[in-house]
Image (tube, rainbow, N blue to C red; front, side, top):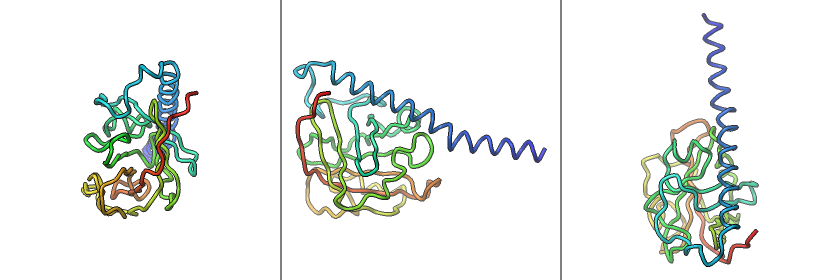
Length: 205
């Protein structure tokens, strides 16, 4: 019985740590490719203004790229586990800003471990590093400005238009990345803050 229990535990760990990553990364890659295909196939004049309207929960609408981490993942609306995060997607907190807003805080969440772990390495980001968010028509470039190494999951101040704990003191166009910390724990949240520094038309593929 001890051997059987031990084997079951090993299989569970393998499933959580390895297999969920395989599945989620495959789903995320497909979602990213689908977004890029859709944007390439649509005529420019048929694409709505970025940020206009509302997206359905689980609907992909943008791509986040972080050059320093060689990271590229699709962004979907919502932060639900089944619809978004467990599929290896980066989720947008409903009610927070969008990149096209004249002011606001575009707040994102993703797993740090398991299920594709999109934000596994965001703790390596330092002031000056770049975060790029691409929508159908525009590429938004943000510059990392600070972070909170750990804050309680109940700290919703980071969702505010001027995020709590950030280096910002006035309204602007911000991005906030959130993930669990420490690794393999949900004890706290690691937060990374960025500020918009560039906005240009997205290059069509």
